[in-house]
Each structure stands twice: as structure tokens, then as C-alpha cells.
Amino acid sequence: MTALNAQLQSINWLEAIAVVLAIAYLILAIRQNIWCWVAAFGSTGIYVYLFHNVALLMESALNGFYLAMAVYGWWHWRMGGAGHSALAVTRWSWRPHAFALGGIFFLSAVSAAFLDRFFAPAFPFLDSLTTWAAIWATFLVARKELTNWWYWFVIDLISIFLYISRGLPLTALLFLIYLILIPIGYRTWRADYRRVDS
Image 1: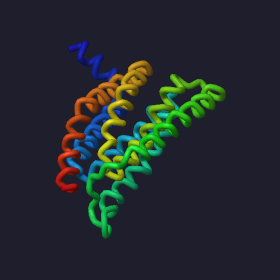
Image 2: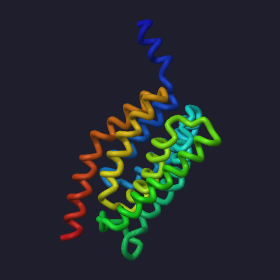
Image 3: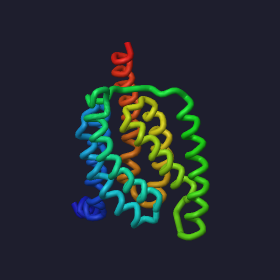
């Protein structure tokens, strides 16, 4: 009983709430339920604070971006389709993805150099890489672009390493759960895309 009490006291309850809201976000996003954006808003608001406290500065800034994207995603899913109707799943050509990947690597190198020079960041390039890639992937989710799921798989894989190394085990576990749910999300959205496309 004493060991259980010690474990419960060591849990960062703010992180736990953020994890629960983040899981709710992903499950609702898989189902294309617009309330996913409300869960995202709550989770990312908490993570702005948490990541800043563990010197993952780009991750903290990214979650500030997520706050704004939660509002944009809500609006776009609700009104972004033809004639201001609900948005359908789409798939873009390779060109915007190729351009985006080049931009992601360039911006990651620049921001990593900046962070390394003026701050004391943890893993500046990986922190920057996951941040810039997640900005693009979040935009793809808000537009209901199918390929977003592939981006998230790579981002989340790298993020697990970052969070374990910075003492955020619940967040690392969250991203492990994401890795399991991502293929489900991809299959669900792909089936909807095929129905819309045919």
C-alpha cells in the first residue's frame, strides 16, 4: 500500500489530464468528430506549460500553435467544405508534400542553430524537426488530408524518445498509444475517402 501511495504521489496530475484529453482528441479525430478540437485545445494548453518547464522550447511553442489550430480545425471541419458544408477527406498530390518536407528540414536546421546559440535546449534539431513537421501535419488534419497519418507516425516515433529522455513518461506512453491508433485512423479515413471519391 505504501508503494502504491508513493507511485500516486509521483504522478504529475497535470500531465495525466493532458494525456487523457490528447487520447480523447485522437479517438474523436479518427471518428471525424468535431469535438476532437475541444479536447485538443484543453490538452495543448496544458502542454504549453509542461514542455516549457522541461526545456523543450520548440514543443512548448508548437503547443501554442496547436491552440490556434484547434480553433481553426473546429471552424474548417464545420464550414470548410463546398458551400460551407462539412469537410470531406481528400488526398493531395506529391508536390505539396515534397515542398513541405524540404521546408521542414530547412526550418529545423535554422531553428536548431538559433536555439543552440541563445538557449540551453534539449535535442535542438529533433525538437525542431518534430515541431515543424507537426505544424504541417496539423494543417493536414484540419484540411482532412489523408496523408497526415503518415507524418504523425514518424513524428510520434521521434517524440517518444524526446519525452522519455526529458522525464515525461506519461506523455511518452501517450505517443506510444498514438502509434497504435494511427493505422486505425488511416484505415478509417481511407475508407471514407474512397466512399467520397467514388
